[in-house]
Image (cartoon, rainbow, N blue to C red):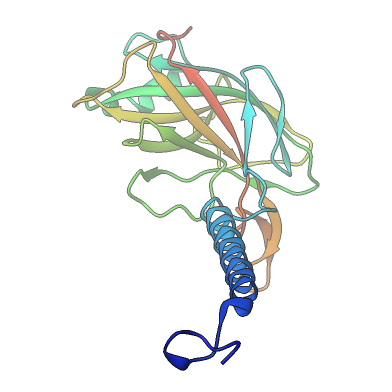
Length: 227
């Protein structure tokens, strides 16, 4: 009969272009979905579309504002047994200098807030960091001694009064064992931003943000002793 296909079945030829058009649209839609999912997955892998880079590059001699403090890093240098630093500092690290290569970040720091700002505690690199102003990231194995007044004879600094400007040294010990550290080696230090937050007891203080922390990053090289 007219219109019948092979073996007496209906003739499907007029429907083929419509089926192909539907399949083409289906394939294109699926490809679009795959592309969108791929882009979203890649974006999520890099932290999202709107997440800003938490790191701000810092150079020696430039001022970095971390919230309450204006910090101007000056140099990172080795401390040797015959270094001409404050005698209080040299006596403090006589024993450590036999095990560690001592290094120091010299910086000018001003407290722009109206209350004392607590400075850093001693810790080893394996210790959990809850709050810290200066964090050494390269090299990664160290002991941190906190901040010391560079020339006042007062030694370890525990806080900085409001409106006060000081010249201080943040001091680390790097093990002599391999790989060790030598003048000219790369150094990376974070200057962590602080935010005003209450603690579990309800008292408020400057703390390192737990969510979306930000910081400045200083990349430099280790200088010779006292340089």
